[in-house]
Amino acid sequence: MSKKIMFLLLSFFILQTACAQTEKANPYEWDFGQVVSGELAEHDFVIKNSTSDILEISNIHNSCGCVVSQPAKKSLLPEESAAVKVTFNSSGYAGPITQFVYVHTDNADLAIIKLTIKANVVSENKPLI
Image (cartoon, rainbow, N blue to C red; front, top):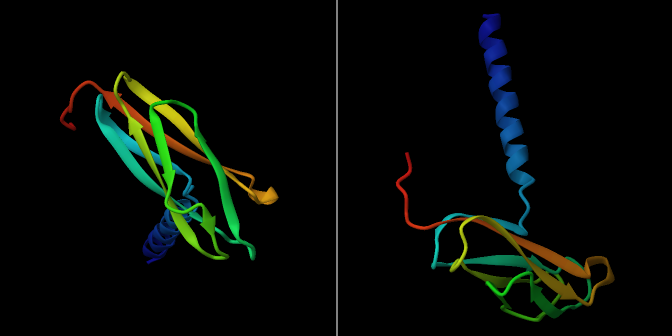
């Protein structure tokens, strides 16, 4: 009987830990996984204005010419969200890459939002084993 209780407690602990790790995922990081060289990979990051003032996106710059980013809106009302579409051009790359997009705002507490994209660029689709 005590083994069953221990098993249930251990299962509960593992489930709680897994849920807690999922909740801690950074919404400003995205891993495309495996990308074939030459493909375009896109992801929409969501930025939320959690302030009581209008949030202005004043500028966006990328760490590389292989990344293009475009905000859906440049002005967000309080509690409003908007997407920033990030497109990675994998041409000329091989292996793991990490690139950044810097979203500059007019809020001193959130002056720069750093978006991170990752990918593993391969020369062709390889079957998963």
